[in-house]
Length: 440
Image 1 (spheres, helix red, strand yellow):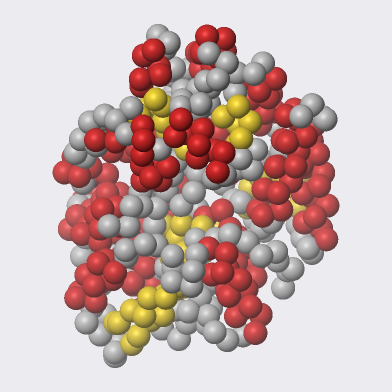
Image 2 (cartoon, rainbow, N blue to C red):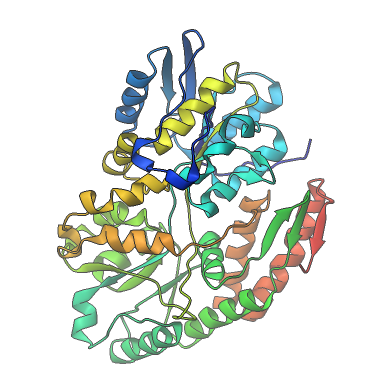
């Protein structure tokens, strides 16, 4: 058993099911399997808010399966309990929420089980990238729940004031970042979030690159590949020119910058609108959502930041029922709608895309824009997936250290990724990982 650091994770659950014909799938009318077992109560750990409505729908569909939903208090306390319960051999729930980013740690630690024998035939209920996010080869360790395709949030009033248009390419973005800051040194159309490696990784992903992967039992590491180096230099150059503001996401200053318009644009995931509404309430009506600029507009693609799965744990005494719950709650049409309207998630189940027109109403905070169609288009541009490293907390911490050094001119921007690669490899080896292949 590998050593493992305490991490941040989000939940998934798994299912047991009957096959359907891919050629004639109607996602809103999938026939879910019957449950033939006796009465059971499943314990579910998750911090998804307002999920009870979806749970109630599930219990109506499967009256012999009751759900004991436990909000342990957020990601960090959930992960801490998962680790301690795995180590002690007792105390795990039947189902737990785990973020895609941190799922490899719990796979390696033995917390979650392979549920492929119950769910593999249902992979087409989800986008390929989302299904791959919970899979290793033919093994499946969870059911995808939500995602965060990258989009660009911007202040239309400020763009109009300075005669800016929403950039379609990254070259246009860089020029507009320089132009607006030259007109008003107190305004930026983007920030570089020093403490948010997952966002930088998603930008590399958007350009078709990866800095690591998992396949055939090995972890592949290449932080210094050409795409990643291009991206760190692109953003670093804008910081050095004073055109992009280095920040710490989710800090008090960051909230203030968004509320006051000092940051007039920023990149985040499809789950961000609800958070932005509360952070920048005073600027309601001024914000808009746009697709991300592209490196190659002829072949648009995107990356994803955030999202979770519901996973069945290795201590569950009712894995088939647990898998069924995970499948149903994350892919049944009415439940998926509630995950959006009640829980404020951005579900990844294919059926959700089919419901966009019904749900997409003018959003007052975004000036009456129907934002869901833009968020959905961004989601459709995510083309592939890769395997995360099992030490993402360390990666995140090291990214913050190196980027802060570069922003303060204590090292070059290229050194950020070079140093990260060296330190991450060394750390993984101290954690017992010898299945590392570098430079591929």
